[in-house]
Length: 559
Image (cartoon, rainbow, N blue to C red; front, top):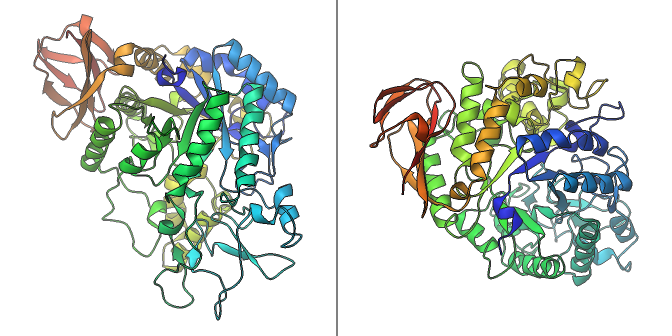
C-alpha cells in the first residue's frame, strides 16, 4: 500500500505571517481556516505549520513552554481542532512542527529542574559543573552565539543549550524524557494531525562533556562533531518513530537534518530501520564563495548559486536517494531568504525565473515543500535596522561588520538578502492596506505590491499562481511521482532531466540564464507534446527550440 505522503505536495505556513483574523497584527489559526479554500485551489495535499504551542517567543515559537496548549496569540485548542476538521474536509492533511531537542526555560519541566539536584525533573536536562581552572565545562559554542553553557540562576551548575540560553536542551539519555516526548506526539495524533516535522532532531545526542576543541584558552567554537549526527540519534529516532507508527501507521515523519549529507540522509530514511520518512537538508545550495569576506560569517553574506556544483549535488541526491526513497524538494523555508530573491532574477525576470525554479525542482523525484507566498512570487521583505538586529545572530553580524569597516547601508543590504526574517513577511493577499493580511501593522512588516498578491495572481490566467497550478497538476501524475529520474546534459546554460516509466517519458528543460538559448532536443516537437512552458516558444524546426531567459519547456515523449 502506498503512503499518502509519497504523492503529496506540502505547503508550509508560517502561522504568524499568513492571515490575521482578530486585528492584532499576528496571523492565527482562524486566519488559516479562512484561507483553506485558496490552499486547496492551488493543488496542495498537506499544510505544515511552524510551532503554535505556548511560547515566550524568544525564537518565534521554537522555545516551547507547553506542548499540550496552543499559544493564545494563535487561538485556542478548539481553533486547532477546527483547523483539523476544516482541512480534512477539503482533503488537506495537517503537519505540526515538533521541537524535540529543547524546551523553553519557562517550561514546567525546567522550572522544576531549577529547584535543585534532587528534583525528579533535574535529569530532564543536561548539567555540568565548571571544569577545574576553567570558567565553563567545555569550550563549545552555541549556534546562537556565546557558549553552550549557562549558569543556573540559583545554583552553581551549568545547563546546556545549543540555541538561545532560554532554550535548554533535553536529556535524551533519560527514558522518562523519551516517554514524555512520545506522549506529546500521541496527544496530537489522537486529535487528528497527520504528521510531524521534527525540528533539530540530529542534535539529540551529545558527546562526553570531557571533550574539548583544540582552541586557545578562553576561546570557544562550534563543535558539531560533538553535538550533531552522533550514533545514538538513530537509536532515539528509531524508538520514537517505531512506537508512533505502531499506533498511527499513516503518520508522516519529516526530519529537519540541516547539516546532513547524502550518507546521513540515507541512514535517517532507511525504511528497514524506521526513523524518518524523509529529511530536509540544507546541503542542496552550494554558493560561489570567492567574494566572501573571511572575517565575517559566510551565511549572512549573499553569494550566487554555484550552478555547476548544484547540478552535481542534485544528481547525487536524485540518483542515490531518489531511487528508493523520497527526497524533499524545496527552494526556501522560514530559515532562509525567499527563492526569487536568492536564486532568481527579482529585478528583470521575476515571474519567469520563479516559474523556472519551481519547474526545475518540483518535477524531480521527491516531495515538494512550498513556502507560503512563493506561488505568487513573493520576494524578500525589506527590513529596517531595528527588525534585522532583533535576531541575536544577525545582530552580532551587523555589529561585527560595522567594526570591520562596512557602512551601515552595505551591512543592511547584505542582511536583507540573507536574513531568515526576510522570508517571514506577511502574506500578500491583495492591494489593500497591509496587503489584506490584517487591518493593522503586521508584526513582521509586509510588501504591498500591485501584481504580486493573491487576488491579482488568481485573476490573471498567465500568472505565477496559475502556472503553479499547472505544475502541481503535472506533479500529481504518476510519471512525475514514480518515474525514473535521469540527468540530461544540454550544456552549462540548462538544467535538464528525463522522467520515465513503462508508459512513457517526459523531458524537462530549464534555461537557467538571463539570455535566450537555442537547443536541439533530438526528436520532433509539436504543440501536442508540450506539457508545460512558462513563456511563448520559438520552435526553430521540428527538433530545435529557442528558450528565452529563464525559459522552461516540459515535453512528453513516447516510451
